[in-house]
Structure formats: C-alpha cells, structure tokens
Length: 192
Ligand code: ITT
Image 1 (cartoon, helix red, strand yellow):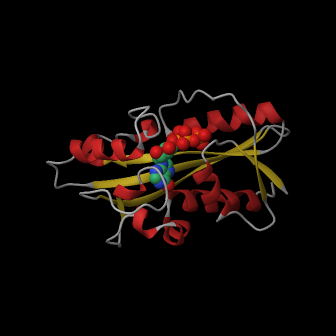
Image 2 (tube, rainbow, N blue to C red; image 1 turned 180 degrees about the horizontal axis):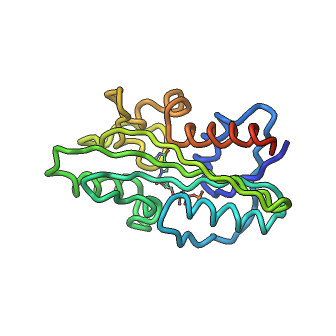
C-alpha cells in the first residue's frame, strides 16, 4: 500500500518510516510549491498540508506539523519553530532560545506533532496529536536528530534528543507517538 507524504523535511520522513506498519510504503512527492502554513495550531497546519498535497496528487497522503513549545515563553516557538529567525542556522536559533531563557529556572517544554491523513478520493480525513514532555537544556548538546533536538531533554532522561538519537526518538518522540496513533486509527476504521 502506497501513501504519499506531504513534507519536504527528510528528517521527518525518515522518522515517520521508523514507525509505520510494514505493509505501508511511504512515497515522497516532488512538488515545488511551498504550501502556506496559515493555521494557528499544529493540527490546522497539518490539515492544510494534507489537503493541498492530496488535491495535487489525487492520492492518500499524510502530513506532519510539529514544533517545540516552551512554557515560560508562552508556547513559543510553537507553530513558528521552522520559521523562527528564518535564514539562521539551527545552532543560531538554539543559541537565541537559550539566550531568551537564560534567567529562567523553570524550563519545561514539549515537542508536539500533529499528524493528518487525507484520502481525496473518499474525502476522508483524520488528525491526531502526539507529545513528548521535557525540559530545555542549559547548552547545546549532541548532533543526532535535527532541528531543536540538541536543546531538548525528554522527561526521564538526562541527555538531549541530540545525544540520544533515533533509538530513543522512535520509542518516545512526539512524532512516533502521533504516527503510531494515526496508523492504529486507520487500521481500526478499515481505511488501510
Ligand atoms: P514540512 O512542512 O515540509 O513538513 P517543516 O520542517 O517546514 O517541513 P514544520 O513547519 O512542521 O515542518 O516545522 C517543524 C519544525 O519544528 C522543524 O523544522 C524543527 O525546527 C522543529 N521540530 C519538529 N519536530 C522536531 C524534532 O523531532 N526534533 C527537533 N526539532 C523538531
């Protein structure tokens, strides 16, 4: 069974592949258009991406909208995670966040992932969310994973996702939780 993935982020695609059922083949889409993410929530943006890509290719697609939400910063960068300091590197983005948080002892945060499946043939859509709770480290640590992984310490560990890498992310990450939930639901309703 082929399902297309409405994402241009290869790190995400690789992580989704770690948790999808064996009988599902994930296909990438060559599409130059950058879908405008105008939603205020992860769920809204994942729905926007799934519907735009689904309409474009006329086949079932999945989309992922995700980000880091830091409590003392009012949920920031949240849905702005990819767009924060647009042209800066992730090291610069993470340094900027550590700087914003330098005076805070309270460092709780979570990664959130909204996963949406859209089948344009049946006009069927389903969305779920996954979370992983944790804290923001005092410095950048590790070079595994991607994005903000080197400053996020998941609850129950003393290392960052940047140090822990895929072995741990595939079990507890926001993305693995969300996509396991999504595929369980799709099996349950008989969609796949
Ligand atoms: P697509 O929209 O093409 O899927 P994107 O990277 O633009 O790719 P988002 O708009 O959902 O996707 O932004 C997600 C950002 O949140 C991502 O670029 C990272 O900065 C951050 N992020 C999400 N999941 C993460 C993870 O597992 N580890 C580290 N950072 C993550």
